[in-house]
Image 1 (cartoon, one colour):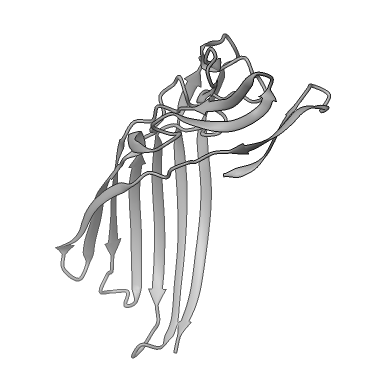
Image 2 (tube, helix red, strand yellow; image 1 turned 90 degrees about the horizontal axis):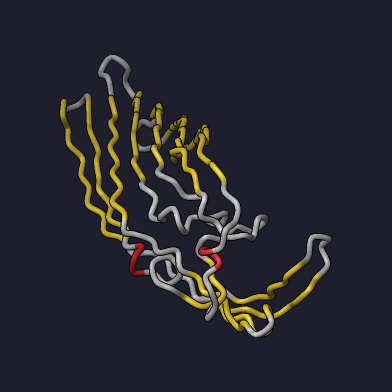
Length: 212
């Protein structure tokens, strides 16, 4: 990432401006899954396990420095280190296709996705906590000989586990638990604000397609 960084006071006046440059990795992952016809022609179960290698990424798992010459006086960089841990997530789902309702399919699924970030580094940029994701759906396939209409509807709720963090830095409006001033005392060691978060995200979706 490259761009311009600015520091403003409480009134919004710009106190300092500089360019910045940062390298941010996305984690690699290994995933294994399969499907099983528990009741042939009626019930199919799908499952997979994913290992995400957060600890091996720059910025998230390993420290990285954002170059900000002159932004904070003698400090020429900001050190980013979220100390992320590897995670193992699990998914399972099922699909029912009743013979009494030709073309219909009914689906349900669950996904457990643990947070990679410890309490001391999670912040307003990540807002990360363990997630439990539940989904329901249904579909109607009216295709005949490869052509025709297909309809699908789905609903999903994402449950974010409640999380309390009281080890954030003194920067109240920009609480950055993974941010340190490079070469100085880590901001995350300062006494500052705390916050609680968690809750739910609800979503619904629908698709309509026609094959020729």
